Length: 141
Image (cartoon, rainbow, N blue to C red; front, side, top):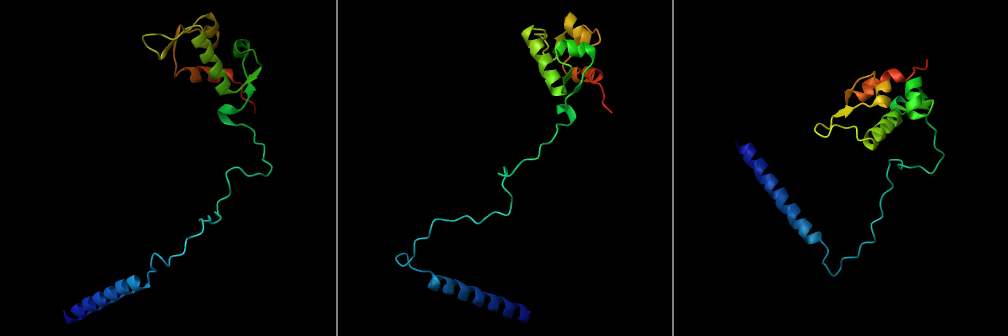
């Protein structure tokens, strides 16, 4: 036990000495020098937009422009489209012709033009649109 008490006394003495030394070494407010404006250290991370030349990357996945089936080609008016563009144009058509069920917004009524794309169905859920469009995109090998 005596060794622990000696240790504690030593710690108290060190802590007391350091706090007195810190108070004694603090400069007075009158003698304090004004700090220059803080200059940020250069960061190690590269900037988000570098001024150098950019690599041109081709879109992939749902952004990739691919050939479409004749039915979807007739609807979109273009021989190629990305999946996102096709879905956007279909939604524009749905909103323009007011084909969404007012009671259940998840349900879409298909007119003759949409039936050619959606396998002749009278009603389609909005989550089904992507699934029903997948057969209209020709896989390029």
